[in-house]
Length: 494
Ligand code: ZN
Ligand code: CU
Image 1 (cartoon, helix red, strand yellow):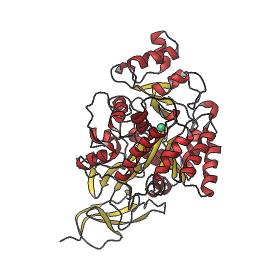
Image 2 (cartoon, protein in one colour):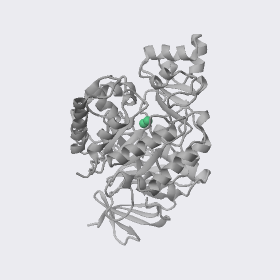
Image 3 (tube, helix red, strand yellow):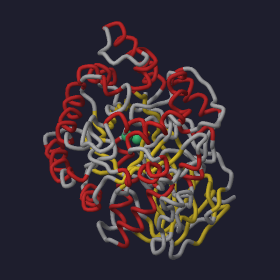
Image 4 (cartoon, helix red, strand yellow):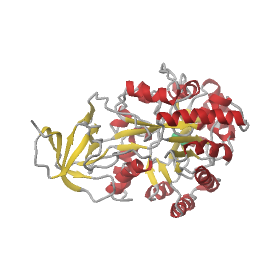
């Protein structure tokens, strides 16, 4: 009888906590790591990993995979990039209440029949019964909850509406959601005032939930928005996660110097605040979030954008528009950029776009900051031309920003995608390689790992990710999905 199920031998081990890598063996039994170092025992399967690196599986702290995890349970677009845990429900858009959630999900999955459930508990149970190939942790979404209770109302809620919204969130908390997200730039989140969000977030005070926010303004009002986030977290008594930390729009480039400084001083005053970031100078969102603000105006949080920099990423019918910029389509239609965008929205209300709006200097400054974790913010519009961040985020940080540009050592890059998020979101026994931790592991080649997806060819997966284990089960072998579905739901410790 072998002592272990699996021993990974002679690997360069990154512990996820940020320590120097060590060469050694990792012994796994069942779903856990049991021994580390020089393991003098036998296993049913032993792999010699000389020359390869092993890290904890990557935790994608910012995703929109709520429906994708059920529609595409193999989750190849994440797993083949080394991701073993996806935090769904960001930017105010989440899995319940179902009718409001499904209306939004239709934009990402226009041609799919959506599975159904009731409440956050129903969603989590559904995932338990139909597990994906990776672990899923769930944020409740303020926007989805508001829509369910108030429809499209643009006013503040009455006290009874607010109580109903709180009750929906309470159901989620009791079922195990890990926090609440907002999308204060979107409908309907932008109609919520600070007090409304405080009242919602306060429901999770003393319950360990995190307030994750796509702030009101990531352009000229970046600092004011950050202050509001800190006010909300402090008044509600909860930890704060700033989503996709950036300064959007050329006229706002450089503002991240102040925003990183602001986060740092808040941390020094004892505020539990961090941020996440995807490693690109282009963002991605709904075209409908861009147009009402006027295409060429520095208004309302998106920053100045030009028509060349706004590229259609996904549509439901007019797929020939995908990959084309508003400038190109405006030439084609012989309409102004604004009219062009309005015309597109008439036929394609759920169209998503890639927005080229950030500076590389800013991206690097945010990434180097100790408060920053990595999160893809990928939109799983697999049928269109999604932003390549969907599949390539983690490999790009490792290969481009750590190895090639030398922004930080590999152990620090890995910490930002493993140990740091696991601690922030209280994923017990995950994000680190040590005896007793879950065997979520990624085996990669530190000399060659790199992103391969581009804006024109976004569905190419990264290179150099060799094997992935999820809860001790091999889900990727030699770069190929094994078909394993060993992911679990990560419920908040109740
Ligand atoms: Zn967002
Ligand atoms: Cu998002």
